[in-house]
Length: 328
Figure 1 (cartoon, rainbow, N blue to C red):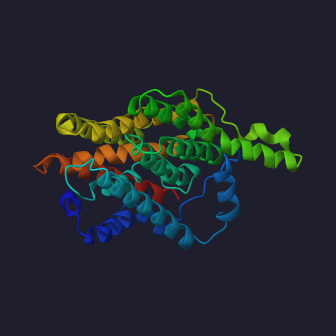
Figure 2 (cartoon, rainbow, N blue to C red):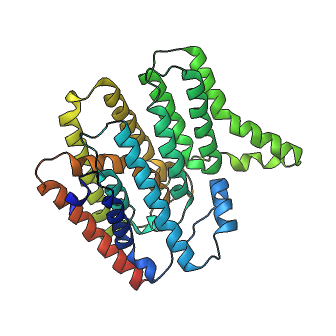
Figure 3 (cartoon, rainbow, N blue to C red):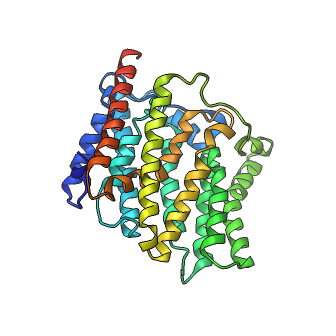
């Protein structure tokens, strides 16, 4: 079935829609829940104000539309950067499939919305190498990170990603580091000004991330372990395929994959280091996971490994659909 997404035909958009609906068939029985926590940032406030109480049909369409737009956008970014050997839609297919791998990800959450900013951030970081106007780009990059943190606090860990990217992609320039940090702090400057003018500056701490080690799941049952194991298998297959072909890539593409790798390593611990973030926050890792899993789907000439990985993921999705329908 992976072969359907291994070319650049526009019909693949239709296949992605079918895959998205198939992965989340349980929404025909019960609408996606809207998850919001006041301590998470502005996205939670917006979701609670505008989405809670909407009809199940609208929530269903909204969720499917969001994951499809994100998947296609990520796929186009990877294709434009020539990070895959050929233009295809495997990264988008992997992203859509992964959204159904955990039941906690089948919801409209701040992490889901934050992935728009995460994909946008990676696009900016990929342009750092030999950019003619790096300071403007760095300020905009910092601005995206600062905005992401205000909107969803667990994205504060992305500051480490942009600092690493700047250190690796460009030679050291003190002025560029200052510009990047100014961009990161700018959203908080405007937020503090707004709160001061409204005499609510004492609530400023509510918009700051709160770090605390914790376990995102109270119990680790067999279905959860199996789901995580299949995702790890997809990731390891993608890393292996990437490592095999890495030497044949030009330096800029290798640096882009390096940034994606660091993004993956930094995003994975989010559910464990942010209080109340929960497994839902792991949705942020789907951007790098989708990229590497998509590479595992597209790189091998023989279809055996991609098909095995795809059908293992599909079996997990089928079980999750059954569980969500019977436990609604």
